Length: 96
Image 1 (cartoon, rainbow, N blue to C red):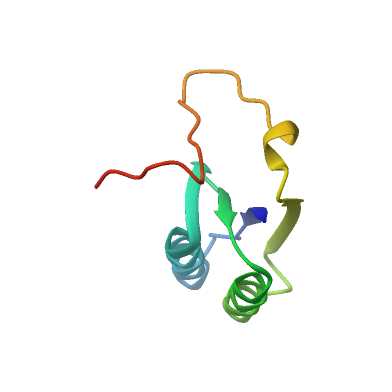
Image 2 (image 1 turned 120 degrees about the vertical axis):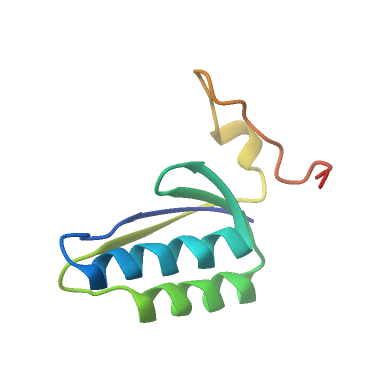
């Protein structure tokens, strides 16, 4: 299933900047950054639970915000892209 993850981390202090980097690194391990604080992740149910637990353990619930949008398996009909950044196909070929 495709999961859209968005986050907003308070970076007024060094601890907040550290949390921002940690959350970003965790998300990169599971998906593709599509905007500064937005990731598209192709996950199964177990991966989704693990990632949610990892991110929630990093964030400060008093200062930060984390949102998960579950777009499901037929996500192609739910996404439209406009603008300069080229869209990517999560299940497509990835060249390294």
